[in-house]
Image (cartoon, rainbow, N blue to C red; front, side, top):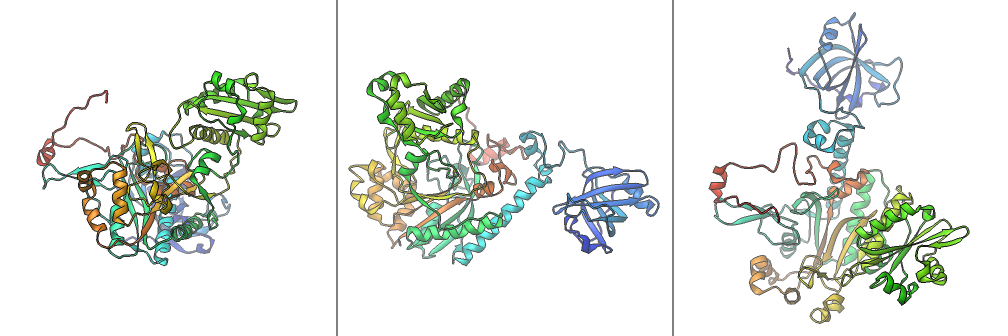
Length: 595
């Protein structure tokens, strides 16, 4: 027979009880975490969000409570009335280990089926099972701890933004479709037949309009939606810190974000020091082979094209440049390991991978016959290779206009080897501002230059004259914030002048009709005295993921989607009734499997 809670009120959270509470009465509410029956003595570990406390039921002194405890099983919901006493044998493994509760009464408020996996820190259950029973998974310490950390970080961010004079403004969730790179999630309108809302990929246009509206400093902790392929650090719906400022210099925005990140890191017990270092995009690509370089270890890239004679290039089918780096401790790699590394390089887009081992007796290379001993030595010296190192050089299978394809391949191998060889200092927190991005990137499908960011990104003043004649040389006023090899966010100083905005749209080949359809109301707003403005958006999920020491966003989101964009617990997405479709005037069309 289950009990009612009635007027019973919690006096303490389970995990908050300490030695100072001894000899006081207490009422705790929670779940049965463990049960140990020793006959006359029965022990229940009772758990709530704060932790666990041991409760003792004595058959001789409190027979009714003991009899009730015999009915309790794992994950039953209970209320305990009793007295806090000092333990005879303290347990240093838990915060409440100095005390226990001698139960006077037990109320069983609800029973429970056996959970599909144990509620412990380390479990072997598949992620799909955990997500299907997310309400069970959230009772575990680790997910619970991550959600609490997320709350504290977001709260500190809000405090920091308020201290800096920003105003939080909510922007619409139902807006018009203005494609910004990824596919929109569309919402059909019942009232306006045949028309659709779109869920926002970002509040980009609205926050710029807020600057036109004179709010000066805006921020928002906002949900955004992108219908794109997922991975460990991407979700279809995600949360970002979105902000915009009027009349900013680039360093003003950097200062705001550095202040916010130092405070957010402090909440997680991480020390971050501002100002953060800066690096040009082109240098990041050439030195690290990435636009989000991990600065916690060296292994810098070097261009070594001149170490490959023309005859060797011809035989190896090398086009473009060759980049290389030295991997500390990789000199003992076996032939099998080098073959595996070659396959990884090819899967990353390499034409080939070429190796030099720096051994005590000298250099050993897979391409010495083609390069010659002098060039092998020159290549190793170019990478500052030391005894025990493995020099890895790569060329690219396909060249990419506007960037260094072999450097991008080498950058992927650098990360893989850095992890495999254990040279990444996981105790470091390395922030980096990346600037000097190209405004355009080459679209291989369209065979033309396309906007690398959104089309409202500002243009470096002295590059304006190249907009129509040499777009590949035009630099943007964009910037990224990177932490430990992850992009935390992107932003830019925006285009605030209508004449420059029109020139950019023309350079992108957008017709007047396309512009009016996509951005009509925003283009009108630009004509009413738009101030210079700029901003940035940081991925809250990614920030929390890193500060929590996790490798997947799903570990720091309360109800995440799988890599197939499914909510296994809520069984979403799902089919809907024909009546709902009829009201919207929608019919489901079969899509070819080949697509």
